[in-house]
Image (tube, rainbow, N blue to C red):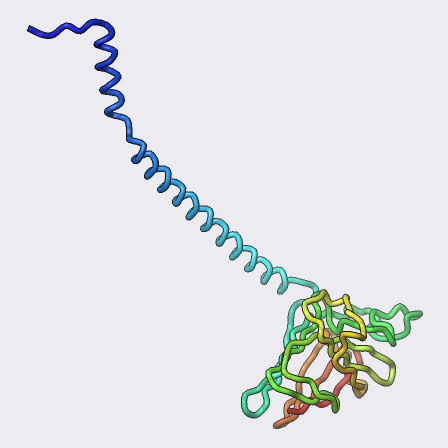
Length: 218
């Protein structure tokens, strides 16, 4: 013969069964911890993916710029190097060097970023002599002051600025004169290059019909 429970006893019995089926506080804590770890891993994955995508996009964006990135390198005997990273604007029919009154893109006598976009960098892993002045191994920014019959190369100790932001003469490491000549057919793409000869590198800056140069020795 079965046992008949009254209403309160039935409620107590059902409650006991429901509670028995519920996870314990320890189980809940363990599940919550696993969920937190999974959420954190997913968040890290999306952050890393976003950073990689941004870096790839920046690289692609730079190559598609009107003034794309370029570089020049000179390797001395013994493996020491000088490297210049810059952006290469196009002439596109504009007057490049000249007087301000001529609406030249680069007016005579004015400090110039020597390229476009970010500042043009000069990195050497050897102590070198630039135009007769000592430049210790290190990272620098270069600017120029173009004139009709001569240029000045400015090597600044300040790095990391945008190209147009000349930090001032108090940050200059050296200022050295450059020889100026005229080339043949106009150069459409702004160019910085090295002509290497043993322990000497001849730095050339060319654009339109102008060539500025100086010697760098180790």
